[in-house]
Amino acid sequence: MAKTNYESVVILTPVLSERMLQDASSSFEKLITENGGELIHKENWGLTKMAYPIQRKTTGFYQIFEFAADADAEIVDKLELAYRRDEQVLRYLTTKLEKHAVKYNERRRNGEFNKPKPKKEEAPAAKSAAKVTPMEEAKVESITNEVEES
Amino acid sequence: MAKRKRYTRTPIVRPKKYCRFKKSGIKYIDYKNPDFLMAFINEQGKLLPRRITGTSLKYQRKVAVAVKRCRHIALLPYVADEMK
Image (cartoon, rainbow over all chains, first blue to last red; front, side, top):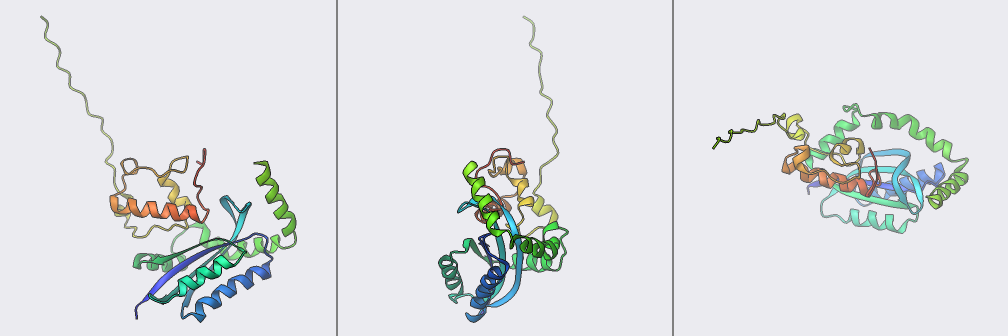
């Protein structure tokens, strides 16, 4: 059976504490591996500003999973069902990766592109997540205030 | 009757447009990279036509898909004023 590569981007609410964030991402990971998927890569962008508010939130935790699975397996359906059921998920996008995309992602992981984003990720992502936790509630308030004002 | 002076318009010489994907061998357009996609949208966040960017049809389709995906995951706005 030929394997197909998929990429799934999930935006989680900024209200989460670090542990909740890890729980959520590990539960999705588990779902992928239990349904016969093979997790290739996992990425955490940390708290990222969004271009427009979703459910009155202006920021979100971006999680990216790249996995390989059998083309006819129902793994994507199951994963997206879990996303929809999960109230912490603001938005998700799952895409099938063509061969050029697979190559591109591989090169990106190895840091061949001198883009600022993937290189920065490891350090500041963890920091920003840590920063958010103590004042998460205050932050949410400020976010909702911003929306109301605008 | 005076002969009307024959008037020939001097052609405006512009550098030839080219498809940047074909030229630099880019095969996949990453929808998670809004900074790169900024080159293909105007300040309102709308897609620029091929006649301006010079992109070939094959890659214009891919650009369009990438921009739409990028908007969906809220890295690019659907509507904007003065985003550049």
